[in-house]
Length: 323
Image 1 (cartoon, rainbow, N blue to C red):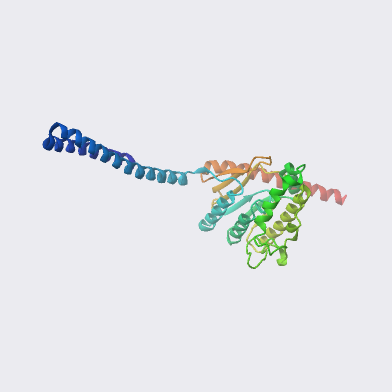
Image 2 (cartoon, rainbow, N blue to C red; image 1 turned 60 degrees about the horizontal axis):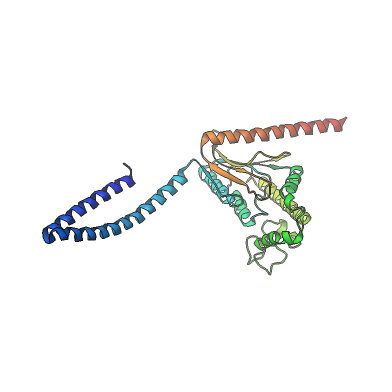
C-alpha cells in the first residue's frame, strides 16, 4: 500500500469512527432527534475535513508527478531556442562527471540569430568546460550556404511590411541600449561592448540590417563566419579538442555525453530540425543507454561516411592537380 492509499485508508477509518461516536452521543443526550442533528453537524465537519484533505492530497500528487517526470529516462524538451537551456544543463553534467562531449549541429553559433542571449550562455558554458574533450561537427561553408537558403526560404518572396515585425523583434533583442547604435551589445548594456567581435569591434551590420530576404541572408552569413572563427579560437586555446566540417545535411542535431573510459554514450539531447514555415525544431533528452546508443550509432555512421568521402574527394582532387 503506497503513501497516498494509506492516507486514504486512515482518513476513511477515522471518518467512520467519528460518525459512529457522534450518533451514539446524540442518541444518549437527545434521543432520536439528536441522531439527526448530530449527523448533520458531523456531515458539515467531515465535508470541511475532506476539503482540507483534498488540497493536501492534490499537492502531494502534483509533487509525485513532478518527481516522476524528472526521473524519466527519456522526456520531451522545449522546442528551439528554449532547448538551449537543456543543452547547457547537459554541459554542466559533462563538467561535473568529467564526460566527453560530442556536438552535431548545422552551425557553431547555434541560436545566435533566433535567441542571441541563449547563445551567449551556451558559448560561456563551453568555455567553462576546460579539460573536458569536446568534438564538434558542423557544416562546411558550402553546406551552410544551402542551409541558409533553405531556412529562410519562406522569407524570399515576403513583402517588406510583413518582414518588418520579425526583423524589428530581432533588433530589439540585440540592441538592449538605444544609445549603443553601432554595437550588438549582447551581454553588457552598461559598457556597450560586444565580447564576441574580434578586437572589440562592433557588429555594424546589425544596425544596417534591412527588411529584405537578401539582407537577412547576408547578416546570418556574417554571423556564421564570426562564430566559426570564435570556435576556431577555442580550439587553439584547447577548449575544443577537434572540429569536423561536413558537406551534407545531418539526419538530426545532437549533443551527446560519453563516458571517458568506455567511450559509450551516457546522456544526450536529440533534436529534429525542420526548415518549414510554421514548424519548429523539437527534440528530447534521454539517459536510456540503449536508445541513446541507437541515435549515437546513426549519427556517427553519417559523419564518418561524410568525412571518409570528403577525404577521398580531396585525394582525387590532389591527384588530378598533379597530372
